[in-house]
Image (cartoon, rainbow, N blue to C red; front, top):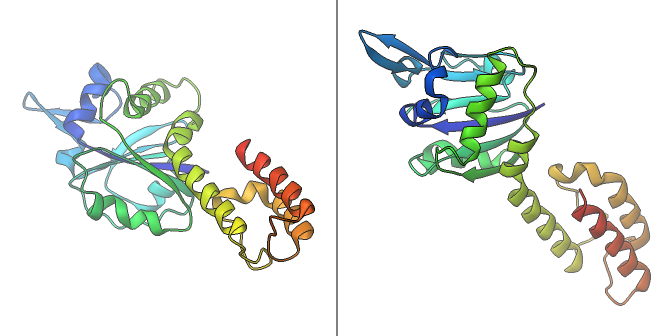
Length: 216
């Protein structure tokens, strides 16, 4: 399971839900005034086939594809799945985002404006659809946007370590590249230690491995 933690300004995200905000349970009307996420004290859980607001709860969070968190809400959570973080310019990066980036199952982060042309609107669209019962949510497009730069950076650093002569028998494959484990095993078998740029077998093996990385 993959998961997205999205920090939001509820007043702004409400505009993306439009007239669906009350229907999907993001907003309630009290004395003619819109109340989003119980005065910004609740989070909004989006699962494969349902979505609703509630107090922060680890079990609910663990079973959610998207967790929408008001910027002002302080919460303690360690994701159990592969996850990425979405935030915007008003999110307190050091207080809310930075602590997630050191976790081993962290796959990336991106900052966007909460606007119709960004991934925030894609999430709003998913909420509208899932609450109509229109099938399960597929987050592949959102996941790709939030993780692509991070994964590319990991790939570049890993290749640099190989080129710089790190011992492949001691160099572990990063978790985000685990799908390339069999190809990396082949590379290690052919290099058997440290990469030598003057060794034709090493060079060809590394080229093959890099080609696989680029297509993964």
